[in-house]
Image (cartoon, one colour):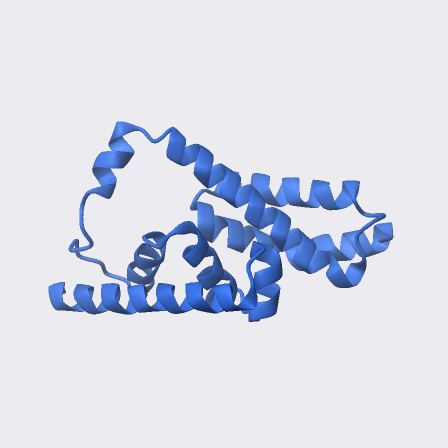
Length: 161
């Protein structure tokens, strides 16, 4: 990969990687760090990464960074966070997107990542498999389970509202 190709990757993919990281982490600062770390790793490996595989490489690195941050945060959860999370989804919401985002946040890590990559970012199953290191079948299963949960969750919230 040349310097020009690297710069093209930064210009065309940094926003998508930021959105992906922000949806997973819900922290702008951490999402910015993920983007920066991701492109730093690409720069270090620019001789080995070809332009046609750069997108998959970048999202795979970003995905792994997000998982590391999520795992680290789970180990150091404060008591306030634990108490906050115990409340159900029965609170009033004024915006549909807030409700959907709250539902997505309740998904397990793998299901959350594949749903974000598929439904928010528009990746195909094969690309998602490469990014998350899952088979295409595993990706489809995780998306199915996530959508099933989301459907049930959103149906329950309609009864409450």
